[in-house]
Image 1 (cartoon, protein in one colour):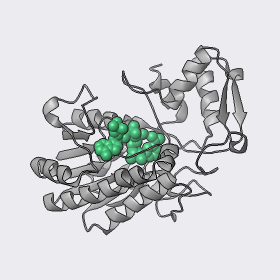
Image 2 (tube, rainbow, N blue to C red):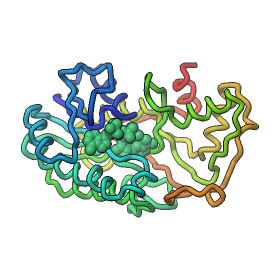
Image 3 (cartoon, rainbow, N blue to C red):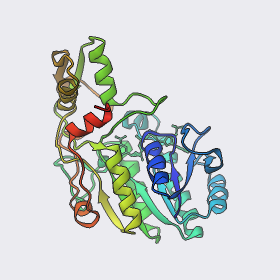
Length: 294
Ligand SMILES: NC(=O)c1ccc[n+]([C@@H]2O[C@H](COP(=O)([O-])OP(=O)(O)OC[C@H]3O[C@@H](n4cnc5c(N)ncnc54)[C@H](OP(=O)(O)O)[C@@H]3O)[C@@H](O)[C@H]2O)c1
């Protein structure tokens, strides 16, 4: 399968390119600027800004892919809110251009979406009604709608709060920030009234691989089983790494204002992926051990 992965320089993108390449899939990586993934050969990397329509058409027609996994996005909700016009271009227009290019190549389309398309009362099922609470979620939902209307063979994959190891040069993830802060004896405040079902990055890679090989269509959720707040996640990191948990202070989102609204009770259930793909996510505790190679 000749497979394009967009956003190959980002967190999930790097793991996904490496995981799928190791399974023997022909991966062609697209991201902005220079290739930041040293495991991808320069001839398999295409530096393209996905908001430029003509560049997308020329790169997709030259690769002529069987599958496009559209993972690139403006992915930080607060940044999206502060940069709405750019966010629309990166999250919605780029999806539209890629879908049009995919149609010309008769490629299947897998869209990487998010639990932020939903509102409160999670964990949400694959067929729950979306109701985004912020602009990031709105743009990801707009992109989902374009994918559904495209007429292509498509699937939509929604993960939640992705965590896992860091390759060299990557920005620290939430778990790494907790570890580094506690190791430096730094007090941290962490939100305790927002529940999520965090997803281990390699569980997503395995789930997406199963989606590709089983040629499934429609909505799939790939998340963890544990329903847990960021504060509880931080406490688990401290416990497992033997660090000082008393440095972690739980806070309510009301007392720790974030620029954009986030659901108190989000998270996703993954019944369809479990049933149709044999998806079995690891526990959050095991994920922490794998994150820090314990
Ligand atoms: N992280 C999470 O917890 C989470 C949770 C649910 C869903 N998701 C979704 O999962 C996907 C991956 O998330 P992530 O955390 O890995 O994101 P990320 O680290 O921010 O990576 C996104 C990548 O997309 C690239 N990109 C953005 N706009 C582009 C454009 N116009 N042209 C070319 N490349 C572009 C970025 O380029 P630059 O490196 O130049 O910025 C970046 O490398 C996203 O679709 C996100 O919405 C993430």
